[in-house]
Image (cartoon, rainbow, N blue to C red; front, side, top):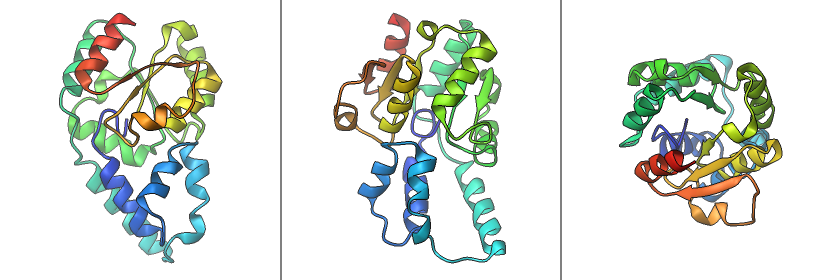
Length: 201
């Protein structure tokens, strides 16, 4: 979702850097080279001290601000076409429900998705791939995962799920070319390229 469908990465990065003293943009990008929840927890000791009341207030403010993020140009049209053609659309996301549901509802695309596998379901995308395959009785060859992060590619590789990486989110092509991954079937640079890739796949 973040960085593929919605232009939320700059916002999320700014929030993380402000709330974690000493974390740089480069460090933030590297967090996304692994499991986000595991890697971000390594910087927990750098979080600015706050009361429980402040934590809740900041959490609500973050969710409210994020809910106003824009869709990447061309993505809504692509999702609607895929939905209309009978493709099963599923979100396998690191986001918590409180941060993703208002965003999906405000953008009026929530109804396009058959299932949402959020952080409450599991913080492991590898585990969620298995749950999704079982729930929808899917074979791996019939699944295509779309992501903007190297960490996701690595989790998909463990799950042996065919994957395409997009370069308009948290990571550019240099991250995806660091080493070969059997699951990575392509890298695309625009929603239109993604549409063509999905059609050919």
